[in-house]
Length: 346
Image 1 (spheres, helix red, strand yellow):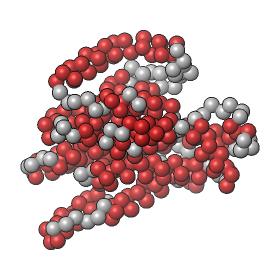
Image 2: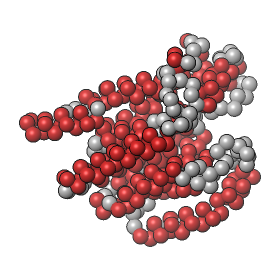
Image 3: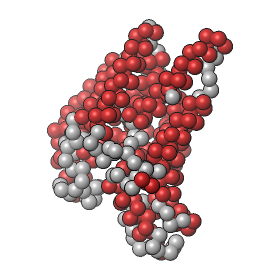
Image 4: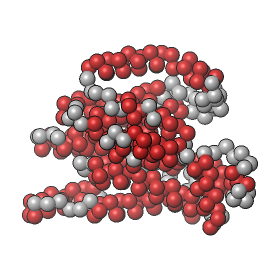
């Protein structure tokens, strides 16, 4: 779809000196991704977990569901119970969450991406599309914060805080984005990144001790040494975040350092790589990186746009497309996502 959209645009620019409206790509690609997400089969563990939670919540009356102490965020509990008022079929939960997640990402792609089809392709192959099949609440929270990025760019703290609070209703980890309102606006210069590099080395060295301390004060204390994700993630999962960071660092001069948007995009890519490096020790930390991954999907197309040499730009883009599709194929092969099947096919 992206190649078709870009080909037609090239012809249209020559003949009419204008581009096609984005919705000609948005509508078919959104429909395709929504269909694959909303009606996916139960091929990963969290599908079954969410089904169990849905049935548990709706086994109580509307008021009692909030009184019995079900260990789930209020917003997600409310969503499950509201769906239960109209239907006992859990598929509506996946329909709604899929729609909201895609709306959050597409809204930002349409508004800020220099190449919407490339952003969508990166979202599917290197972003959070498939991750949303499993860690749905986390990606839903990330999509809400991403959709509210306008307030981050425009430095409207209280409106941004409301967006984070909404995301918090679906996943507690969203609170990490409150201090990052300030951190992501750091100026891109040698001093700041020297401090960040030293800090990264220290945190990497003391990371497990830091985690023990956090658990001692009640943060993630339910994740014991033997809990899921408390081991290091495979190096293959950290390759793309690190590669994106290196690519953006190499082209950092193409950014306007006085632009808060460009600073935030670049700093987000830095922390996307940072949390994926930490995840080599403890995999669960990778989930925090999901809040920053979205901005790489905007920054990379912008860097391509700023490449003056047309042939070099096409070469870079061709290599990127080949690599992310190949990477996606390798990572998903023989995983719970392979083969993909729809819920009615079981």
